[in-house]
Structure formats: C-alpha cells, structure tokens
Length: 257
Image 1: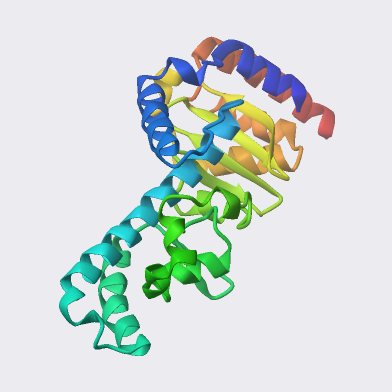
Image 2: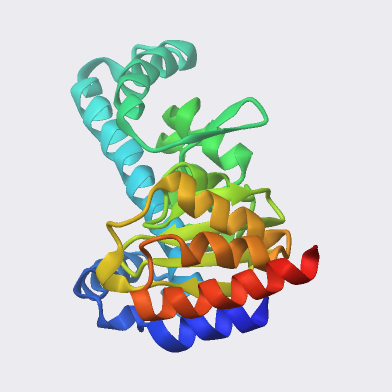
C-alpha cells in the first residue's frame, strides 16, 4: 500500500501547522496546560490529537470542580450540620445535572469524562466529589500530573469527539481517524500513526462518511486495488490524478482475474 500512500501524500500533504484553526487551538491548549504545570509536547500530528483528548479532559475536570465549588459555597452555612451521605447527595444532585452536557463515553459500565484519569479517578469526580474538601483530594484541583495515564481507553475518546478528528473505523489496536480540515486519513496501530492518506484540501467537502469508511477499510485490509478504485472514482483528488489512479486500478484488476 506504500505506493498509493506515497502518491497521495506527495501530491497533497499539507503541514497542519499552516492551519489557522490548528495554531489557535494549540495556543489555547498550551495556556491551559501551563496553568497546571503540565508539558504540552507536540511531536507530530498524531501527538497533537492525543494532547487534544487530554485538553478536553481537563476542560471537563474543571467543570466538575466549578460545580463543586459553587454548590459548596451555597451550602456553606449548613454544611457542618450534614453528615457525609447528606453532603454527598446534595453535591451529586448538581454534579449529575451538570455532567449531562459534557463529552463522555462508557467504559466497563462506567461513565468516563476525564480520559487521562483511570476509572477510580473518574469515579471520584462523578460520584465522590464531596471528598474534595479533604486535603489529599483537594490538591487534584491544581496538581494532578502524577495521576495522568495515557491511552487507557483505546479508541473510545476518538469515537466520542474528544479530538478534532472523526473516528472512521477499526478497533482499539488498529483504527482510522479523519481530519476534515486537512482532508487526511490517519491509521493508528498500537497508538502509533503508521500510515496517512492525504487528499486535496480544497475538496474536503466532496466526500461522505461512508465513502471515507470504505477507503479506510480497504486500506486497513491491504486491498490496494479496491482502495485505489474508490479513490479514483471519488471527488477527493484532481481529475488528472484520478485518471492516473484509475488506469493503474484497471490494470491491477485485470491481473486479479
């Protein structure tokens, strides 16, 4: 499949750094990460999308904490008269209402809102946030770098919009993402980007999810002939390149017979 990948990327690869939307979002993420003393390291496009999932997790985390603080202040006058279960109930009423609006996904029967935290830490925010009044938990509001864990939930954060890429198909070990701004497919294997297919950025509105899925599925099964045929008959590339791929596709298809 390397020949197809090389042809497309040579013609259409565009650096993500040239996108204004990328630069603005990166600055926003760097600012938030700096507030918490966390390094925002972007090595390549794939690491950018990984950082995005953490950024979205931090945004969710802060919304939980803001709700906690608002509820705590509103209950301050009688907080001391309540036992633990009463405090927890009152706090979780507001938390449950707030979290309906947040990005999340289900993992082993539990709702995950903060993908760089394990299930236990997510449970602290969704069910036991009342514990934030204790020093050992309150510190997570400002310092949590020591409890960050990477790639805990496979493709789930990408399937549920924690990244600017669209999840196309695959499983936790090998899946495909699509960036509509770049008009580029990524193939992620064991959390490494192993392949990309770039299409004409000016034609990013000229495809459908189904078409992109068929391209990705054929590429992931090493069916170059089918993959090339779909691309050649799409509107993702210039007519001149489409004719070139179409000619090669027909030649390879005859060899199959």
